[in-house]
Image (cartoon, rainbow, N blue to C red; front, side, top):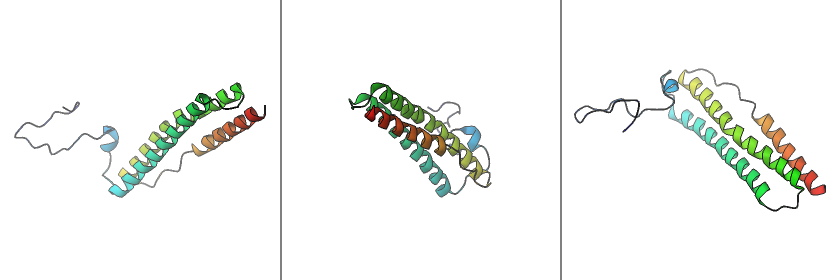
Length: 135
């Protein structure tokens, strides 16, 4: 049984369909062409895959007994896990902004700047690993 909305009785049709979340967003505007919404979801899922890869890399870096100075290895793992924690929030925010623009038939919002912190973080991780291997 779904929460938040009464279900139809045996002789009442359920014309409204399933509840879509977030309800506030889906109450706005009109449904866009499904191809655009699905493309937006694919982008969201790509960011989620990136997040999972960052988590896995951070855990693997710390979990494997690599010949890297322990302090540098821990710092690199923490940076990877922190990036993996921030990436889903970025993905959700980007999905929400784009879906709202599609529903309201507005131009797409400018890209968010997660690429810059991600690049800086990965360069930092690379530098920490190299320093840990040399030191």
